[in-house]
Length: 353
Image (cartoon, rainbow, N blue to C red; front, side, top):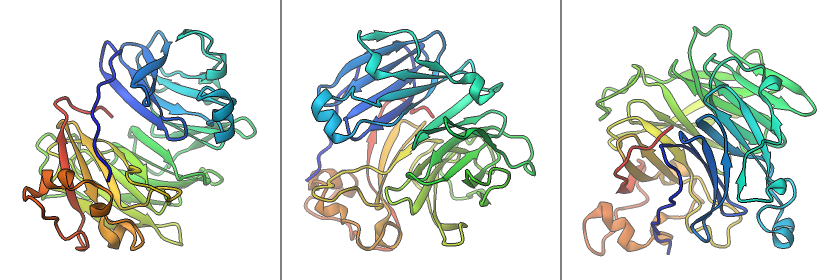
């Protein structure tokens, strides 16, 4: 049974703006307003490395990680280990961890700013297969690869807006993005002039949010499910829109998760609780944190998460599920059609984008 283990990672002197987790090495990368990025080893709950910069760090991403064989031979800082930082002053920097001979790193391996032709603030970066993308305040997703150079993905028919988030669909040539125009975009990097599909997210009159940024709600954050079948988007009204991708490359609405957060959804992920002998987690569990300072774990149920997905009652401890159930020894019917909150954890401080 999976259990929640809580501990605090101390080191940053100001707000933590962004996080990225590398499952292969159990390393966590964080970026902060204190102008540093820190690499944490979650097996020891200690900082392994501090990257000191001269500007607040607004987004972080792991590059190509080491193989399991390289980790065994060389540890987590193995061959091809690199991290990327998006900066508040419109820069994107790369750091090769193989050159980290000291616990404090001050010089980047590469400054990618000119290669991206950036003149707008970077809101999020994402990496996949030797390619890195950046969502910027100009309403574009900028993609750079060593072999293909710079590609700009932009919907010229859309009015001016800020592109707040972007995420690759597993290891494919497709990605999703969203922003202050309250629209989801689905792209193929080989066809950058027009998205494969776009979907304007409607206003939700049943939302519990009291401090909504836009109306309809802006897209704050995105997360693909492990299979790449589902895309979850965290919205400014405290709800979560879950869509799937049809065979014709179009968005298909699956569910609007509501009655959870009372303010904007800041971050999402599909956790790997209780994977056991399975090679990867399934699409049924979704975790969210909002600017209301609460972490929720959602059960998307078999209808959305997949009928072969593991029942949460079999992988999460009964004590955890009782946090939301409120009844000793009883589980809610985990096979009902509608998604539901399994439990919530007060976080005391608001989560950032």
